[in-house]
Image 1: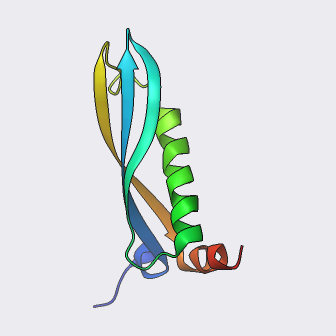
Image 2: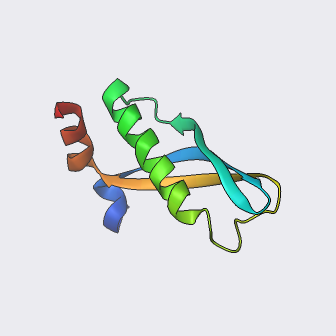
Length: 90
């Protein structure tokens, strides 16, 4: 039995991001690791930026907020194989 739906024409890439909070406010957002063995430098840079953007959008969600400390996030990015190939050309 073959792949179904989105799985046959897209890739899923995992990233780890950290959001540092002090006094309930965001102080720093960083992407620690991009899990992509077949990405070139430009693709990794794009994925890191996209991961940072998604962490930024999630920084104020109630389940992510801390008064003080570091919230560790796992972010999954799903991208079509065609769009991923086009990243190489940009």
